[in-house]
Length: 317
Image 1 (tube, rainbow, N blue to C red):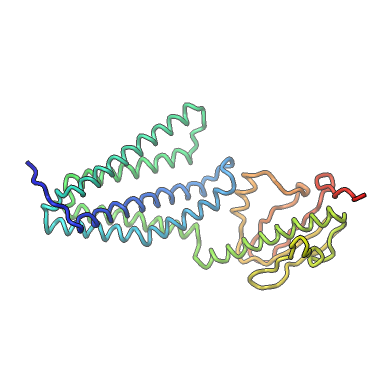
Image 2: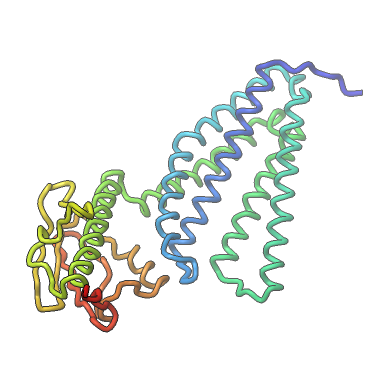
């Protein structure tokens, strides 16, 4: 008959730490793989927001890989050494509760994954490569955790510490590859900062564009300068470049055409390509106009107002 071992606070928090960091690292890994799949295999029906969300997911996953995963390894080996010194502690109830909980959640994940896959197939939806890869990701991760939990339940890592070391080295190398891939997609923090500044410039230009349209609808003429569209009554104030503090360049080309320019630090060609593929042109300009796609350096955007699509405001009688 198995002897009952009294749980201590050290038992509880060591095993809780291992399980908590394992769960967080697992969620981060799945989120990371899904994000890479979304970027590598863009889906037209998914929407442009998937691109930015995927980049955010990669950034969050990288933070977990760099901070939480090493904590997981440290606690895992701490528990291993703790149990090697006091093998009777392997029978403590909290350890078995956490192991069985992990096995239960893994089995539930596999079942739900199978239900989703079968439901998708029965509804006639196309099983795309990106969908199959995501399903395979969940299956592989679940089976890996299931294998690890069974080994832990059988005290394999206690009786053979080298097995734990080999498993840790293997997963660490894989996480290292993920970090390298993640930075390849994200770029350096400096590059991310520059991209944010460029995103603000695009937002400024979009705002200016909208106000120029409002000016034309009200007057049926284009403003001669950006200062002309300032309107304190409507709280309209033309923004300037937040980094250089210089005004944006603006030129009138014809009665219905104009251009405005900005100096960008990065290129957003990839993200805009996804956006324009996912969402039909929403701006009310001629069809040959380009969205705010830019390369690094000075970029100008030409806009031609189509009176058939943008009508002036009715004259006040």
